[in-house]
Length: 303
Length: 305
Image (cartoon, rainbow over all chains, first blue to last red; front, side, top):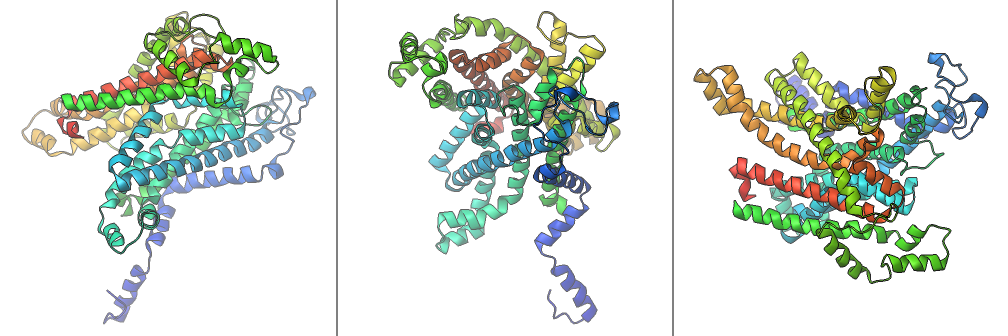
């Protein structure tokens, strides 16, 4: 079908349909997917909060005020100077939560980026070459899966010292397995497609084929795994900080805030409820967003 | 089948060996363990004494082989912090962790199997929505936070259950719920997906067409096949859970191996840490090996792969 159709009006509608590029079609499906839009909106909001935390925070997140310790949130009988109350050292909870979004998102994004690069490279090479290289990669995946992530991460942080950098790098080195597994399988399938053989016959080199012919076709899988891994990196960071072997005080990390609130559990349970809720909402939104991306990019979701 | 088992066994052994190198080497990657043990304020003489006492002055490969040889015989040396045999400490606490793991996986299966099956029979029903909700929340809730919320509700507000310790069976209830809920979403999703898959297959249609009772078709024909992958995932989850027990046991101060792992890591007890990383990894390797064999036994198509 082309614009040279005999009937002008028919030709017009046909061209209109034809002009929708795959990308536009994807956008259209995305806009229609309510879960994707809502979770995307929440994520955007959290990202904006993280970026503009210094402008939004009503108080200095590190400033202690021993005269105003454990002030209750405004909705629980506190006053409006501290909307979400203060912690055991009199630091403003709202400000600490806003800054905490930076820690969670920063660690999550960087660790995922790092593990994504490691895992995708391994998966592409294993899937493309097969044979020995594939065996080595599968072996490495098995070794990685056998090591309990949280235990190794705890050990690394205790040996190298707790800091955001150490936590991020440790998680980046630990969470690549799912990238490798999925990208390996996808590459194996694509490897036998005719257009890949055509590129090979035309003399394209391996790095070019992997970059130009295979990688663009696994992007949707990459986004889905990245969302899952980002969620687990954020959970692990919070878990490590909660156990006292992650981000160190006085940095405002949500996991650390829960750990600090634990001491006051008997008297003031909102100290752990609020940061936990933030963590839950962030991870929940990331998971739903990943599910949404999978739905709109899978073949069944296209109708 | 023998060939399949042998290949898997060789792979498992190689992975186990590599893991042992990593768990041993981790301590050396961060620098001199003698300095780490002596503390930052120690003098050179004190460090030298420690180095000699624990054998850190020998070449690292010699130390590794020595350690591995003893580890195979169940001897992990002396704890640097508690000054008692590491294996005694670990094995006296492993029972608690294994009990917790078994309770948790049973709890997870008790929820995920019926929910998964029922939601597959009636997709988009109210029950299906509840099941999806349980799964989605379970995937996003941090287990340590969930544990603390349970403590607030059942220990502080209602006073029904002990908040910490491992003296009675009541102490295991909340840890079981927390750890079990952590494993539930994956198991439930797999049961539901497997059941939907099987129910739409030809042989189920034939069985229905023959006029078999729906209940018989469901339990005798469909469930059996849908459950195969769930069983093996449960075995793998069991391996994961023993690692996940670190967080749960620490929240509830349940005196198992996971709590010991946290204590030894926070106290820089390197020998206990090495031993626990190795033992937890071995659990995972054994459980995945069993899952692979079980799978191949139940489904002959997998044996060639």
